[in-house]
Image 1 (cartoon, helix red, strand yellow):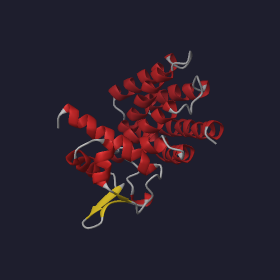
Image 2 (cartoon, one colour; image 1 turned 60 degrees about the vertical axis):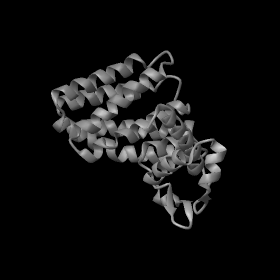
Image 3 (spheres, rainbow, N blue to C red; image 1 turned 30 degrees about the horizontal axis):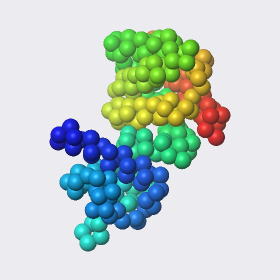
Length: 233
């Protein structure tokens, strides 16, 4: 695919994906791809490729003699990072953030406990570096820099757990954290106790204290839910 085709393909996805996830095309709606191609000024081949991507996310299904039909929400691949991004951009953002944060609260404390048991020396060093990077960017309205280290911190926790299912959730967590920053569901400076908790988690993992790592990570998750009560009620 040429760079131009990739650009057109992305433009179609960024038009249709958010519209579908926002309910502009309710479940059961039939997308007239020829009309959409004309409206979006792209070729039929570009439109077909975009539809294939939407099908892979289970947002739509192509059926002979019916066309491209929007699927019920229950069938969507809600773990797809792009679907998460689109849903967080919509009006249902508060509910989505809460749903995803509850998921994190169920997974990450357990992952941290496992990381304390199985993390390598290199992973412990990386986790500490991420936590210190968060500290360094925690004041002075440096949310973009803070986000970079925050995302990396949680990826290391999930990867260091030694559980490949947890590790695959790294992109999901990254989208949640990125979405909170992008849509300003964050304080101008991160909550200082929450930053300190990340440092303490890194210490617990390095020391091999699984119970402490799990308990501290649970505190982080509970704090994130409390922040949502304030910032995205």
